Length: 291
Image (cartoon, rainbow, N blue to C red; front, top):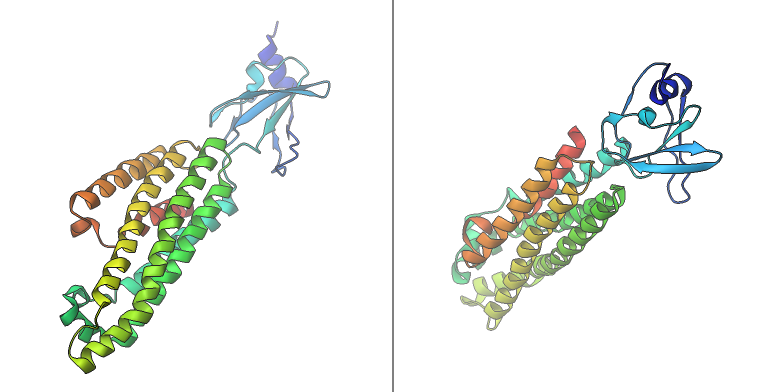
């Protein structure tokens, strides 16, 4: 005499999707007679009895629920709560990686001479006017693309807690990004003027040093929010089945450690280069592309 699980395995053939008013249906699978299939990416399953669906949560890569499905029942699988679809993951990953690449296109042209005291740096900037504009134009572009990728990731994640955390990470990162865009706009407009005056008059314009410190403070805000945003994004990855656990822990540990190091070194030293602000987001994007 067969038990319920055996009968269910023999009787159930079609695996349908639970209709959901807020999410589109994503496909259909088939359970073969006598087979205990694995449904990758399915986050909830249920049994349809007389039009009523009883849903149960289940982790990824688990056996089909034939073991608890009653004889003659129709197994239904809800994908509206599952991992992001492949196309969405590839697109979001591409945007995040593009943000890192765009930043690097400008950043590789940076010269350490620009970081000297103003009296020495401004004449160099004046000579490198085209190079200076190139660097900062690409950096501004990166600060538009990367937050856009984070917003896309927030929308693509299906798990509610992960979505909330990713939205918080996007807000934190984006707020700091706005601060640095203002600082970069200052570098594109006021700094070239001050550089020209320093060459023609032989001294740094009065009051410029104070404005330069203000722009530097905006950069500090950007770096801190980028590190903290990366940590929160790592929490979102941990709360989602769409990305590997190691990637989530990497974001949490790296973000908090670099934020602490940035403060401990008085906003200078090895934690100061803006490249770090795009590293974790670019890594998430690369994992999405490869995964």
